[in-house]
Length: 244
Image (cartoon, rainbow, N blue to C red; front, side, top):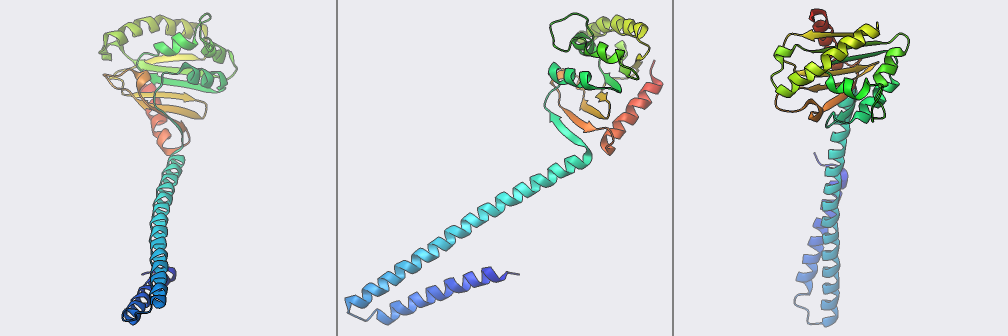
């Protein structure tokens, strides 16, 4: 059902066209150029008015469509917020992001993935060139902190480079486990499919693909209290309970 402004606009256009036609008919037989000039002026004015209306109507429709798209986007953003999504990372290859996270964590760091070799290489070194090279070691030295690392058994890693990384990471994991009582690690018995990185009340969640480096895959930064993230945390706890 049309609203009043739309009905009024259509009525104005209809009356304007009717008036114009009436003027044309009334003065079509007049030879007086004065009246013909008036008719021509009125016709021009009506044409301009009608043209302006249609231009305004087109602009209104564009603005209305843009508003609807913006409103839809706002609804989608709101849905993301309800899911607990804080940020979407297109890749997981920025050590600055993870370094900042580890440095500012004060409770727990749980990791589930392929081999954890990059985590140890980038953040568990006394010496190195990166800004956060010893961030994980500093975290372990804080009171009431906990690190859990859960990775795949070597036989479930199919790429040669992942097997090499496993061999490099294993002695480092064992060394840290002996040096820090709050450092724990275990192996799950299946092909790795999920990347989980929990830090305090937040987490980064993403997939693991066989043909793509884990650092090149996307991740969702989420609140761990969200329903979506809770499923991943439950999965982590379940896998941890079954880990070797």
